[in-house]
Image (cartoon, rainbow, N blue to C red):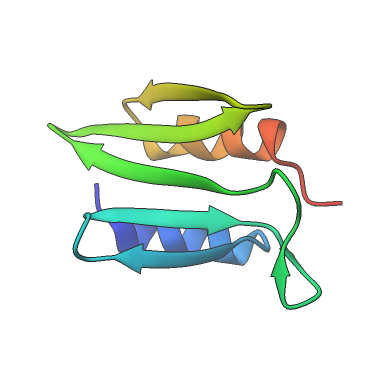
Length: 83
């Protein structure tokens, strides 16, 4: 698993991604008017061969773990759909 593979898949679906080398994570959001759509941003990290997705539900932080990239992509498409 690597960030480049995940980033390319998400960008092909219309999401905007940015890798942060210092914190070793990928920030993702839905682009809208030169910014991100409200409540559409989340962060992806890879730790011990598990993919960790962090996002907020209202003001509550949520953390999900995935074993496969396809599971992650399916969850993102469901939770953060692009209209």
